[in-house]
Length: 548
Ligand code: F6P
Image (cartoon, rainbow, N blue to C red; front, side, top):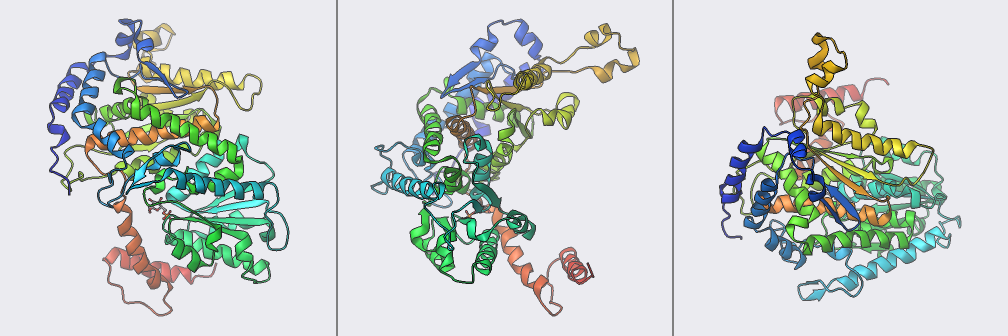
C-alpha cells in the first residue's frame, strides 16, 4: 500500500506549465533562434558518448526551468534513488526493478533482501560467455557431431524484441559464419520460414521466456522439438545438444525436457522489456561474442551512472522524458516518432514500442486511482531516409503535432562513396525543415504561381531532438537503449504510475484460451460470447473446412 498520491496535474509546477504553454505556444522556432544566437550551444548536451541537441523544441529557458521544477516536485529524485536502492517500486507485483544491476561492473554491490546480486549476475554472464565461446569455436557439437551453424531464438515480447533489435543493430560485429533467426509469432509461418532451409543437425534453439509459460513461445518450442527430434532419429538425448533455455522458471524448463545445466537464469526483478542485457541476450552474445557483449553492458552502465548522478538540467534521460511529456501533456500530442538514420537500427522502434508503451500505457496511479492526465505516448518510427518517402509528408504538412527524435552517427560502419554524407545531410535537413519550414514569401520568391503557394508552404515550428554519436558500437547501443529506458521511467515517475507491470496484456490471453478449444472442437461447440465473437468463430470453423 502506498500513501494517497496527489494528482500531478494539481501541482503548482503543472499549473505553471499550463499557463506558460499558453504564453509561448505561438512562438516560432524561427524567432527563438533568430533572437538567441547561443541557443543551440546552450541546449546541446553530451554524456556517455551521446550528444543531445534539444534546441529545436518549442521551449524557452523558462520552459526548461518549469519542467525541471515539475520533475523535482513530482519526487523524481526519490524515485530514481528508490530504483537503484532496489526498493520494490513495481508495487502491483511487489518487485524490485533492477535492470541496472544487469550491467553493474564486477565488484559493485546492489543488495536485495540482504543479498548482493551483482556476483549472481556475473556468474550467469560467465556461464553465457563460456557457452558462447564453445558454440562460436565449434567445440559445442550437435547430436550427430556436426558443429552448430544456426541459432534460432524462440521468444516473444521482451524475450524477442530486444534480442532481435540487438542482433540487427550489431550485425556488423557478428560472426557471419553463424545464421541467426528469431521466431516469435504463434503463426506457424514464422517457424516454418525460419527453419525451412536449415539442417536440424546444425541448429541450436534458445527458448527464451521469463515465465516459460507463454503460449506462443511454448507452442513454438514444442514445434522446434518435434522438428529437431524428427530429423535426428527421435532420440530425446538430442534435446540436450540442440536446446538451451533462458528463464527464471527452472521447474518449467525441466518439465519441457531441457537439462537445467543448459539453462541460463535471471531474476524476477528483471522486467521482460528490460531484459535484453540479461541472459535473454544470449543470442546477442552468440552473435557478437562475449567481449562485445560486455562492451554493450558497459554502454548501458555509463548511461545508468549518468542518470543516477547528473543534475537534472544536464541529465539526458530526464530531459528527453520531460520534453516528450511537454508535448504529450501540454500540447496534446499523442505520438513520438523515433527516426534512426541507421539501417542497422531498423528494429529499434519496435523495441522502443514495447519499452515505452507496455511501461507507461497505464490509466491508474500507483495507488489505483484514475490518472488525471494522459500517460504513455504512442512511439513509432522507421529508419531514415526510407521514412522520408513515406510518412514524413504528414509530419511536415499535416495537422498533427508529431515530436521527432532523430538518431544519427557521424561515421558509417560500411563507408561507400558519398552515401554517409548524404545520409547525414538528410537527417540534419529534416530537422531544419521541420523547425524552420518555408514561408509564403519564400515560396513566392521561387516563382510559384499564387494558386500553388499555400500547398508549398511549410509552417515549420515542428519540434525535434537530435541524438548524435560517433559510430554505432556495442557500447553506443547500450547507451542509447538505457537513455530511452530511463526517459520512460522519468515520465512514469512524474505521472505516478507503475511503469513495470503489464496487466493490460492478460485479458486477451485468457479469452484466447477459451476460444482455442472452440475452434479445435470436432463437434459444433456451445458458444456463449457476444454475437460478433460467436459469429466470427462459426465463420472461421466453416472456412477452415473449405477446400484450399
Ligand atoms: O505478454 C506480455 C509479456 O508478458 C511481456 O511483458 C513479456 O516480455 C512477454 O510477454 C514474454 O514473456 P515471457 O518472457 O515470460 O515469455
